[in-house]
Image (cartoon, rainbow, N blue to C red; front, side):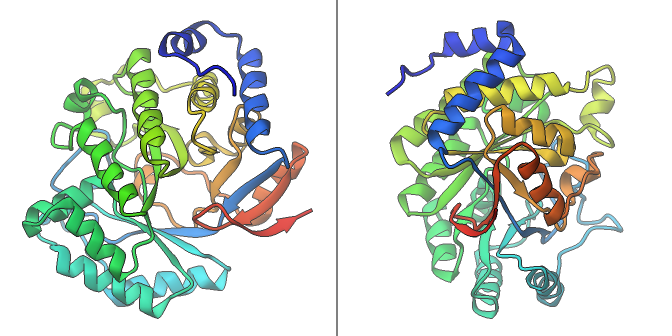
Length: 350
């Protein structure tokens, strides 16, 4: 086994490595993990069941107060209509998350998950961030473990990594002071993994974090993966500032470059040696850099993104159809395949 990258070495790579060399290193590591050179994607739909949220993160343009005229909680019929549309294009997964609603308790979530699972048994429910789970526990006066256990019984299959942002409390205190601490985020994923609920790990960079904060974030993910093996993938994207309070507070904040994205992605591939899958964030980077990411360690193009409301509210406006994804993958000499939530291959396009 290769010598594990240290924090100091990773920091040096971020700051000093030649980008082309870094890409070559990340590609070699990727092909050790994925020797068949198959690049995957999933056909799914983001369903944001509510935009009502009391956390009001400074980097978010999606959330609303209960009293706002455009605040909503989707009805079950509205959710069903969205899933019906997903099934029509061969979708297999819903990424299900919302704002942190101050009044919805565990029973509402149980009814919702049970309704979807029973009506659409072929659809995987990949839902509820650690922050939502933490707040459901608090408002329902039960433990996080009980929330996870009860939702799993009703049909919850896995949880997304949303809400990680940067796993540094000094950063979180600035950009999202009401959000759970970094250690709590990690512990909720630990608890999920121990109940055999797999999850993804994420990172949103490009706000006020330092390079050291980024390496610390990588290390917390790697450490938990060593402990539980419960992360299926790592997904990283850059801060999208349009319409956000954070950009109004720090108007001269520079938008992260494509070079920065590819550099951090490559170091993530090298540092996260125990996370098999890394997604390309074409939603925030666009299809060209999304494709380039496949040369910098990513082995998955993520989702066709039938619907996306959160980063699009903050200015990301890219979309991609299945045929375009297949073309981008084949264009770099790899084999395209549709996968499910568990990264099992469903269909290969030779």
